[in-house]
Amino acid sequence: MDHTGLPADDLARLVAVEAITRLKHAYLRCLDTKRWDELAELLTDDVTCAYGGGAYTFTGRDAVMRFLVEAMGRTSMLTSHTVHHPEITLEGPDAARGTWALRDEVLDLEAGIRIRGAAFYDDRYRLLDGSWRIAHTGYRRLFEELEPRPPGVRLTASWWEDDGRSRLAPAPPADDGAEG
Image (cartoon, rainbow, N blue to C red; front, side, top):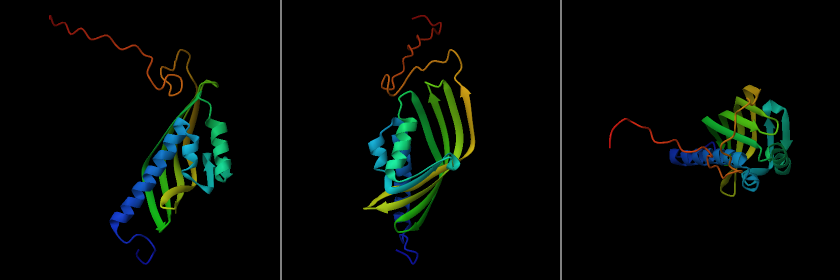
């Protein structure tokens, strides 16, 4: 450790940043695939969250998980969250901050709507028993738009209905005009 309490060598810092990056990616994978038990293990007991710029705020793992399951637990609520452009800062031997650009899309099949947006996550992380955990997560929107799903648009694959397999028939081979 150097005088700030941070890992003294660049390799240790890179390892910590990679572990935090994997943590955030796992959080989003578990969110989108509704792996609630696995997602809960990624959070500290006293986690806080502020989704939608603070429109939805919760304290404690149980409260956060209850909100996520109630808001997104239906298999007719299809989500895709991707983050990129991480800015991760180690603040001590067991604390870090992260900012992530978010793009997300939600299909609510029951409500017949599609929501798209972009935001920036502001996260805090804590190292507990050798593993990084999310101590705070939240985002503030750059934009969010909602639209009705157009008539005739049909879902041709779903993680839950058909194990993610496309129901589209394979395209017939192209006739290139060559004789065989």
